[in-house]
Length: 383
Ligand SMILES: [Cu+2]
View (cartoon, helix red, strand yellow):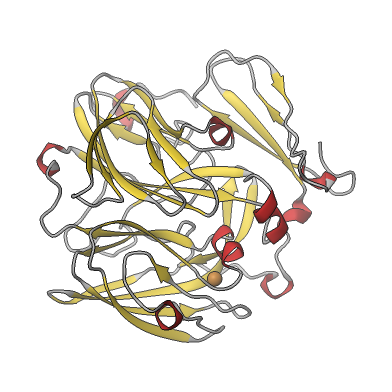
């Protein structure tokens, strides 16, 4: 179901979620006027659901000034320079990222990751922020949802090959989105310029002592490359989860904060049992905390853990917004939360957005719960 001209690239995506689906499903993005936007999805026999996506490589051809541009990831620089003051240095850049098996996207991004690197500061910190725009062609900027500032000056464009400096205070605790705010914002976010900043509450969360493992999970969407029409009018082609850590820092931590899990991009399948390096692990009976953030750009997330209940939830990650016993937590576009849940028995627990069309497009990850709490536990699927 692809354009007659041009080769098709088929990304076969096995989602270890559904059992016994034996029917062939054909989806068509019927709202679209162009015949090059059709998708074929097929559900395979057996344990795994397979999702195949035919795309035209021409859909992912970089714009002229970015042709042959694939900038290496650049480590974030972050330094505490005072009790309530940190320096953060980031880059806006252009980097190839595999967003689904076999499908490479020439992303606009922060520091070579999409979603961008996890930032962690403390409630009340002043942030001295520097943005180096390594993109030779397009201005970029940074909009932190974690601060109060005049957006015209605080989130101002940084021109190609230039550097901007900004200063603001992270006065509220929580899990916040950051993104490029350069016009057209939708293109900049959808091309990969988004990420998460956690502002750790000064007095912690009331349930801190109960938590055994902590992960950071980010949800984002992908559309046709740099196509504003597609981003505005079409459903996403992929909806994905990534997990983020601070392991890009040399000492592996910022202010003593560490997280479990690895550091991935927003790639279909990245957090499933198909990859035992990046799938999540826990032990039976452990309480797991997720810092979750839906960086969009367009869709709501209905975050849910299959086989568990979100025992404690802090909406937007603020300890004041404590809720109990939610089956699903709604994250508006940009919204965040801290969610905590117990995994009582061994098994494979998938987490999803309960909008299942998005699950079929990649929005699923797995926590493998076994006695070892790691990849040697023996409950991995053979792969
Ligand atoms: Cu930008």
